[in-house]
Amino acid sequence: MANIGTFTKTSDGYTGVIHTLTMNLKSVQFRPTDKTEGKGPDYRVMAGAAELGVAWKKTAKNERDYLSVKLDAPSLPREIFAKLFDSEDGYDLVWSRPRPKDKTAPKAPAE
Image (cartoon, rainbow, N blue to C red; front, side, top):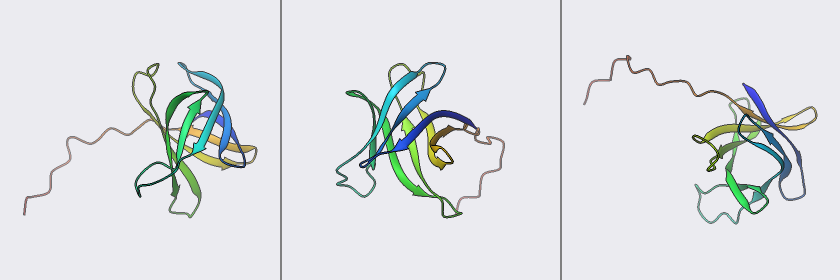
């Protein structure tokens, strides 16, 4: 896991920074959406007027709340999936490399 950002909670979302090899953003905001659909995102991730991605409220098995984040911008080779967790000093945006799907696992028989 890699910490790619740090954030603080604001009255209506989160504000902070994101640092990766291809992004060095010093003013990133998670802005709440006017959620009209059940599956729509809870937040839009913005850098100024540019939308970087979206985030959904989630609860882990241990009942810890977090945001599931999907970042996708023209400067990225592909989308980044991360989680925004509370920490001792605010909130950390944490990225983990996706696990490859096991293509050798036997498939379940068709019913």
